[in-house]
Length: 66
Image 1 (cartoon, rainbow, N blue to C red):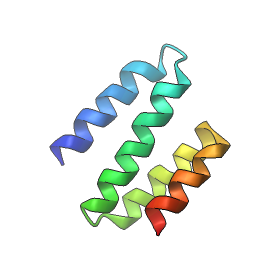
Image 2: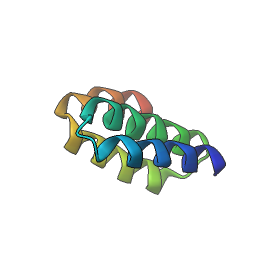
Image 3: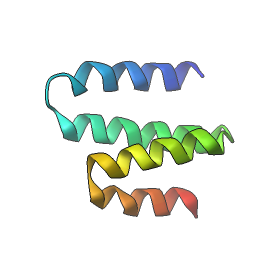
Image 4: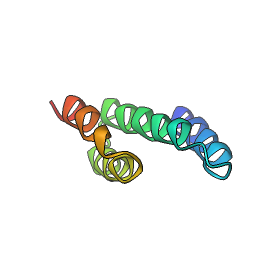
């Protein structure tokens, strides 16, 4: 849970500055971490958020889902 907290802090710091690529990467990594921790509902929620950032993130969501 600590790793997810650190990733979300990074997302919060970067999202306010208009750096969508950093925010997008942070959300994708948090999605992957949540999946590894077997928190699938959180992983799905973060995957949806990642797709909202960049539509091409659907590729990473598909990789994590497999």
